[in-house]
Amino acid sequence: MEHKKIAFIGAGNMVKAIVSGLIANGYPAELITATAPSETRRLPLEQAYGIRTTSNNEVAAQEADVVVLSVKPQMMEEVTKPLQSIDFSGRLVISIAAGIHSSRYDEMLNSTLNLVRVMPNTPSQIGLGMSGLYAAQHVPVEDKNFAEQLMNAVGKVCWVENESGINNVIAAAGSAPAYFFLFMEAMQAEAIAQGFDVETARNLVQQSALGAASMVAANPDTELSTLREQVTSKGGTTAEALRTFNEHQLSDIVAKAMQAAVSRAEEMEKLF
Image 1 (tube, one colour):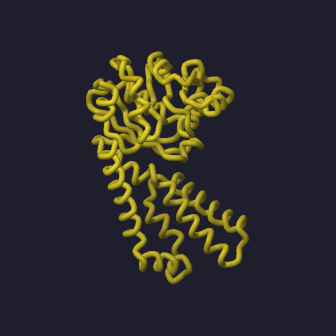
Image 2 (cartoon, rainbow, N blue to C red):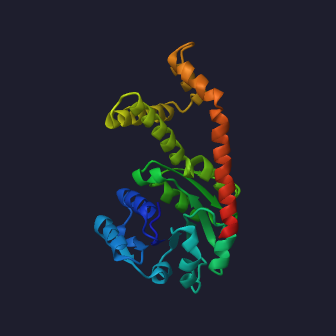
Image 3 (cartoon, rainbow, N blue to C red):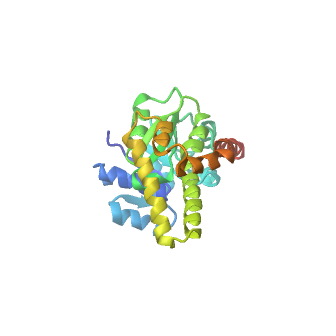
């Protein structure tokens, strides 16, 4: 990975995860700057990783080759205002924010940007993330490669050809950890109702989820349906549980939930 000066505008959990991954992979700490208005946000990053921090977004961006915008969508316009005087030609801009179309960044920063939109998810915080990336055709290949390598530091990546695909990534990966957490919550609650204490119930569910995900990863050429069938004996307990799920149209519920996530992402693009 080419070593460029990176400015993270924002210092939240996702920035911490990416910085941690970069440093672990040998990226020079002196080339990384993170910004936040609060010293309580900045100091932990300085102390943990030896990077530079500042409260001045404009100075950080001005000195950087790569500017990573990592603030909440509703804060983006305010945060980018002081950056409008910067010449962004030759700079890579990476956005880690849902619901803001690439054309809006051009408007907010008064420039036709070399922009890569990234949609990560929270497992990036432990190096097991899944990120979707989009870049317009005019963005140089070397910039796309850098963005991909940046996100590879916290997990796996995929590219989407059309910007609307980022909304589909949100549904399939960005929001997805919450789906699994909800399912695990329901399983834990029922395990407790059936007599297990909280710790044991959590361990039963947690280890089963971890084991199932690990089996999927360990068998990349095996269809998910095949793995499911391997657990399911005709007339057995698993078959009865799955029959109940099917009776209540679990697949339809999942589809509707993912479609709702896409719809909300599209609505947010109109707001911001």
